[in-house]
Length: 89
Image (tube, rainbow, N blue to C red):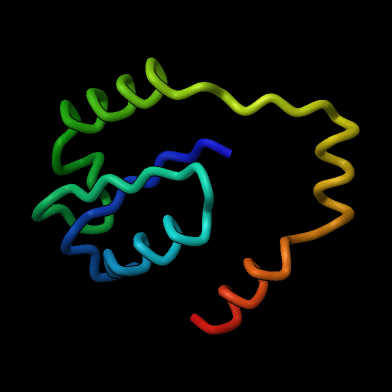
């Protein structure tokens, strides 16, 4: 699932390394850290946020699933390797 994660490098609520963990656990995700930003990077640099978001939307192929596929994914749950990864962090 294509996902854009935007994090502040100086986030005191959710440290930036948590963004790295989330990025590693989410195939298809992209992490962008805003240098010097805290928990609200969109307040620190709105223009950069818009540029990053526009680039992601313009250059990322959207995921395509039918309602039946989503239902099956939700019933099946996370892959075992992902579940083990989450438990170790």
